[in-house]
Every structure is written in structure tokens, then in C-alpha cells.
Image 1: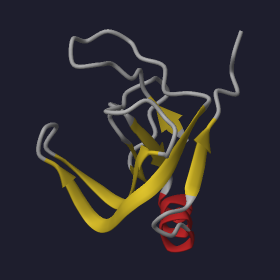
Image 2: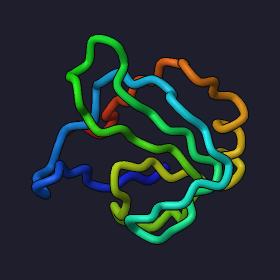
Image 3: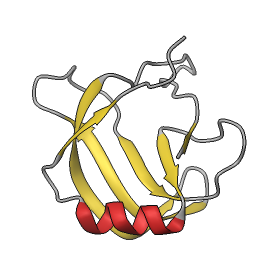
Image 4: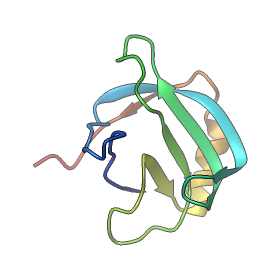
Length: 103
């Protein structure tokens, strides 16, 4: 899996880890209008009840896996994994994003 640095609207880094989200939508052929890239097998995550209101969501989807952080609030997976997650995840499923690489 690959993810990049998550930033708020002012470009400041924001902490997306150790928070609970929920699957709010799935789309097999999503497309980012902002970055002009396809995001196949997208699983959209939003605020879970009890989380800070108004927090921007995250997306899990298939995408190229570079050797450096290069994503905007997304978690990219290889094709087989993205298909598996897409088929397995159901709307309403709680998702916990854990930062496993803490110093």
C-alpha cells in the first residue's frame, strides 16, 4: 500500500492516522477531477460517528505504487488487493487507519 502526505485546505499536514472512518461509498470507475487520474475500485471513507465533524474523507483505490509518498488523501493498492477490498468492504463498515511506522 502507498499513501502520501495528507494536507488540509491551506496545505498544512494533517493527521489522518489512529482515527476511525466508515465506508460511505464505493465506485468501480471513480475519476479524480482535481488530479485528472482514474481511481478504479474506489472505496470512499468518511467520518465515523464521534469523530471531528467536517474532516475530509479518504479513498482506498487501485493505483501505481511509487517508491515515495505520492498520494493526496488516498491509499493506493495493487490491482488484486484493490479488487479484493472493493468486493469485501460494505457501506457502513468501520475502518481504522493506524500509523504502523511511528518513530
